Image 1 (cartoon, one colour):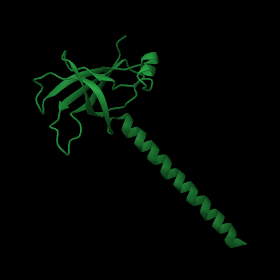
Image 2 (image 1 turned 90 degrees about the horizontal axis):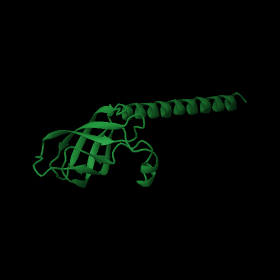
Image 3 (image 1 turned 60 degrees about the horizontal axis):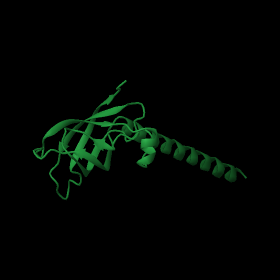
Image 4 (image 1 turned 120 degrees about the vertical axis):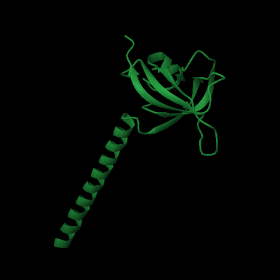
Length: 138
């Protein structure tokens, strides 16, 4: 009878340990995402001037989409990566690697530091953009 009790207790401790590990993993992942340490590759519209050289950096901004616009674009409320404006050039739809949260409903816009990548088998995204600020326009 004592061995049955020990097995149940051992199982309980194992489940508790597993739950703690999963909880810490989730917390770590969301903290890293909130801090902009995780990469999100998105196909998005980005303004690209013909003279933007490989390795050159530009400060860019993107509006946060809300409500009906988010719904029409089939994106989540507060989506931050629908378009990236770096200058007044025409937009191109390209794969962009973002360091920053995909959803930021607490802001009106996001400021990025974007670099044009040399496309190769190792570099799948045409641009890499790192978030530098959240913008309040009101």
